[in-house]
Length: 456
Image 1 (cartoon, one colour):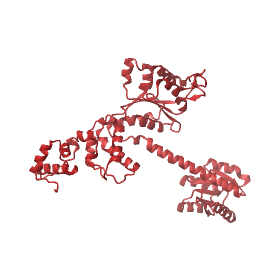
Image 2 (cartoon, helix red, strand yellow; image 1 turned 30 degrees about the vertical axis):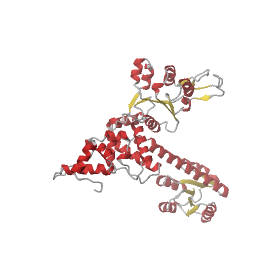
Image 3 (cartoon, one colour; image 1 turned 90 degrees about the horizontal axis):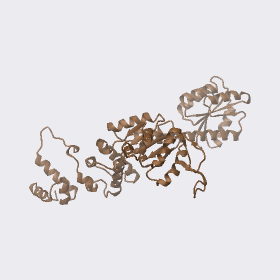
Image 4 (cartoon, helix red, strand yellow; image 1 turned 45 degrees about the vertical axis):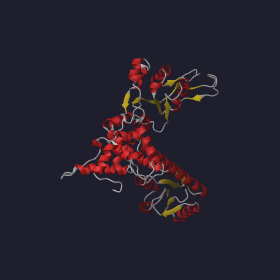
């Protein structure tokens, strides 16, 4: 708090000078103004953290000054000073946005305490705002990168679904970002300030899943030495994300159905049900409709979950998004792994676009991280790429070729391609031939044809 700027506004010179001195002795940077007009003039020229103003002043009153500050400088804290007989006016000032009031004569310790509390309150508010901004940036729908129509359609529906309390079912292959979308829905919903609780139904043994979800009471079974709060109760007033819901055993599915229908749960060993208020977002990589037909998933639960279905497309269906994702992941890992000077030539992006990415965005991110960690030089080379990317080779339409208006000598182009392949692999003929998709014998023939030697 030391060094915070405070403006003291009072028409009585002695009082404002004494107050200024007390604040300066406490380590604050204190400025004074004789009336409301002077105070606004100071605020227009020098930012202040707090204004300490008398209520009764000639010309512009303290209430009028408070109103103008709240209109023009809403981040500035205002504390009002009032005589004992006019406390009602101070209460009115607090209704209009003042943080607190001090009664004259102003006691040094009371002044320091109220100013400290006001500035601490402001600091905490600023911290909350910064955290909220960080959360919005991290979990906003814009954090899900891509411009493919099928993805944008899903995000548009998700943003509208976020404003409701309806159950959402997210479908998508492993690695498409289902949990990220679930978080975006929660943090853009009216429940954003309440818990977001995740449980992966496929990662917990079946015999433990019920107690993890619903909790239990002390003595309900051997080893239950204390009451345990389940994930559902932890999510009360917030959002429960049931990841891989398709892995949930049939006997638990009926209990989740009751949760959705009745808004209540039965803890293991409890005599009465517990009321809960949670919003359900579920996700799966499996075809639940086919599971319903097979009898491995309850039909009634499927329809309860499938109120708002959202599908995240696999990465192979949005190839135009891959170069942007690669660039973003590359910048992210360069900073995280302290390799700020590392470069990724744009010509290499085509290699990423031809792979089908069965692990989707997660697999792509892992590959980029591996490149940043293992690249020996200051620039990523073709030889640094995983073998599966080099083998697949970029399609011709992914390679940017421009034909000059005056035409071009095709043999000169061929010579340049052979030379560049040799240079890229330090004249390793086997690797250069693989890169050009020709035999080593054919490469040697072309080297002789174009008179290419290492000193070239």
